Image (cartoon, rainbow, N blue to C red; front, side, top):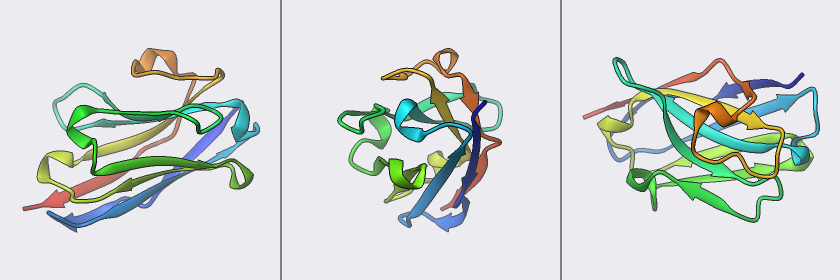
Length: 124
């Protein structure tokens, strides 16, 4: 089993930055593809970013490209989501997800493990 714990969410003004962290335990992070998803009130969960287990390739939702960066530190068993130039429409609960494969992709059904989520609120 893999346990994922997110942290780093909070309230920030538009244009500000936050860095989310996802600490993994139960398995070595280097054997997992990782992703970030988010869910706003009344909306479906949507893909935000993904990174292959080697860290060699990343993928982003179009609306966050150039503003968000996903990265991983396999030695620390931690994945990060650096969020810059935040907008009110980025407000959501952000979830970390892991898949026992080289690549997770953009579909939440692909992922095997989920964190409890961390709230990000961007005020205008």
